[in-house]
Amino acid sequence: MCSQVTYKNRTRPIPLGLMVPVILLVLLTSLPLLYIIIRAQEAGWSHAMSLIFRARVYQLLLNTLQLLAVVTVLSTLIGVTTAWLLERTDVPKRKLWNALVTLPFAVPAFISSYSWISLLPQLEGFGGAVLVLTLCNYPLVHLPVAAALRGMDPALEETSRSLGFNRSQTFFKVILPQLRPALYGGAILIALHMLAEFGALAFLNYETFTTAIFDQYYVAFDGASAAMLTLVLLLLCLMVIGLELLLRGKANYAIERKGSPGMQQLIKLGWVKPLAVFALLALVTLAAGVPLGIIGFWLLNGTSSVFHGQEVWSALITTLSFGFGGALLAIVFALPLVFLAVRYQGRLSIMAERLPYFIHSLPGLVIGLTLVFFAIRYAFPFYQTSPLLLIGYAMLYLPLAQSSIRAALIQVSTQLEEMARSLGKNAFSVFMRITLPLIAPGVGAGLALVFLQIMKELTATLLLRPTGVDTLATKVWEHTANAEYGASAPYAALLILVSGLPVYLLTMRSFTRNTAHA
Image (cartoon, rainbow, N blue to C red; front, side):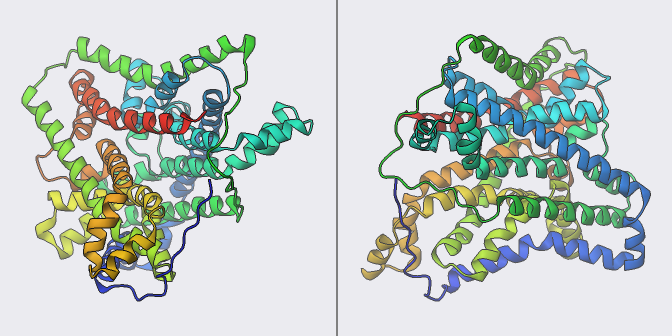
């Protein structure tokens, strides 16, 4: 497939109607950085330095880094293996396995951890954290690597084998280098998730920066220490992003070809096939079967299983409302950012587009603390209101909407928009009547992705939700924190159900679309 994108109007001045919302968004997404600077200034820089350079921070740093490294490596190995098995071999029922191995993506990590803890209470500390978080996060590598394998031109592998390289040599010399962008992209997401993870580690009693920040804020009421720990966490985020950019370098693995990719010849596993099926079954059982089975057990046998239908229904409606509202707001925020980045390339557009990605790497806890800080001081009527919570969701998950919309917008020819403008239509009318209908699939995918993440969000919700308002995630958290596993089960089951639907639709849509030619 060969495509060329031209930007004939890149030298045109940016319309004021586009510039104003983008500047407001840049200011909004800069608030977490401003929050840390203000808190450090209030504490005094010498006191701030003493809060940073102390033994406890070194221990938190060690805990966080070793968890980040081990979980990222293990998840990457598992994700690459499952993607290769399902895309390159003749393992039976590949479509079914593709849905099953991505199922853990719909199970929030804190629900998976409480399921494992209720099954094996001794499963605490580093070992338990590695097990649970690896099983929760490997789909973040599986999904992009599988997509990259589907789009790879089989002619390259055929050429390698014709030159005398066997399958192993072809994998390491031809396939793996082309997987680097997808592999690094998935790995960095896992690493950033390790920095941001809170609920699962709180259940597993493993302390990292995020859990320590929460304790400082909620237990010790020490905002200055929380802010300084946040500063160290922010520096770690920068290091992870910088390492990924360094590894990725300037390599470009785009494949130029005419037409669609040819038929991919699947590798026959032979006597190894039963072992591969057993390995996939064991993985799915541990990653999804255990949480779902434990929730089912507590649902039927928990002594605290006193179901309050009205409360469950209320939490479900609240969760869906917040999910849809936050996703819609993220789309509204993302549209001007993406339009500026694609149609008016320049320094401003690059900065405006990249800043939300950096904010996305911060834990929800930091976003929550930031909005609480500014709301109490400068906009108290918004404190603990639904609009403030929706803004927090949009800040957290804006890049998910950006990436989906950008992929759709770069495929829309600028000639259509210029033709409409030549007929006397203004820019807003052209966007609403020409551009928006053409990028609707990307907008829909972004809406589903953000909706899915908001369903599972916990820490920002705990800080920003209106008083007396509960979501499914907060109800699970409250009941499981009091060891009321039976009472938490209906909320956990509903949360997985509403999260699983968008995961299934997105996974099946991608799998079907990209394998239709194979």
